[in-house]
Length: 116
Length: 116
Image (tube, rainbow over all chains, first blue to last red; front, side, top):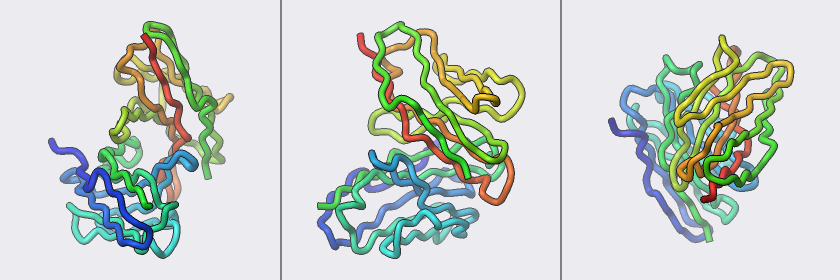
């Protein structure tokens, strides 16, 4: 079975540019999470979707960040305009509703973003 | 709200030595507890979890963890480590009930380095 698929794996861009990160969750998983990982702050939950609907976006740092889930098999995280402090590894993770209590999130391999 | 403290940011050990990675948590409600492992350049994967029952739980790759409610700890152990266990290990908690029970709160991670 294919796992969570993220693209691009690496992105280097200049300050002010728009960045779009993509995620394909595991088929049948109805919960999707975007996390950001940095040395300073560790893993932070940015946004949580359930059945394609954003449930909790309290972790989105500011208006420059937006996320969408137009269907059950695709989600995007967009940063516009990007800033150097956005440099981090961004993870997408998915989970089935029946596993909500077991905590078994399935993570993608991450998108490493560097903003110069 | 919950918080997780991983007491050691780095733990170097020699191959075949025992290891303990420490995790303490704080929560005003009952929680489930998890350990995730992140190998270099990969996403996180579930190592083991405590939901209920026996306080000693066994996970993959020979790891085990013990839940101690009075000390609010969930330390991870392995009696004999291998080079391939070199990775970053994350402790995480989730509230058992409530509106935010989908949210995993992660510690900042412990980098385990196994040397020959």
